[in-house]
Image (tube, rainbow, N blue to C red; front, side, top):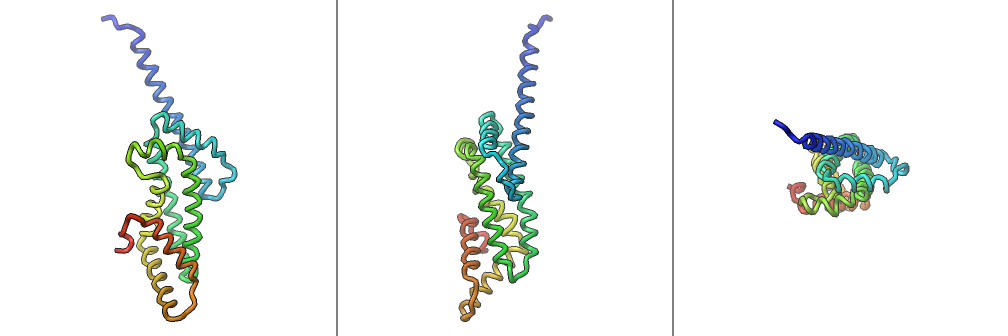
Length: 196
């Protein structure tokens, strides 16, 4: 049986090209992953946002948008675990202040990551009906930090204690209470689960 010799070579070349694309996609992801960790570790000044944007753009353009989205989500979950531990260790006297400080830093990180993944947000996310990257990250913060049973109970108890204290005429740190409530509104919009 005589097979055309080029048929096997063409399929093999396509297969090798696909493998190269996957390996190149993995390299692009690893660069973005490194950048995400640097952003959360407050080392973002050394990053080239143009290069990171191009890498994310290339991944989405070459049909690796789902891999990028899933990896960002998984990385966000991994980053939330030590954050939850840090919040748990805060003493009651500084709990709200520490919580608000961490929330402010996380919001800044989310904005930087959103800017890197802007092309994915505009082109991949709407086609797949996934939440925008920043909404997905807010959701992970809610699930892994706010709804952590130890954090949730303390947060609600401390907020209620501060509100009661003010109603009894005591002076409280209104800005900390207001900031914590604003954070809950931002993170938990479209969800009543926190309040149940």
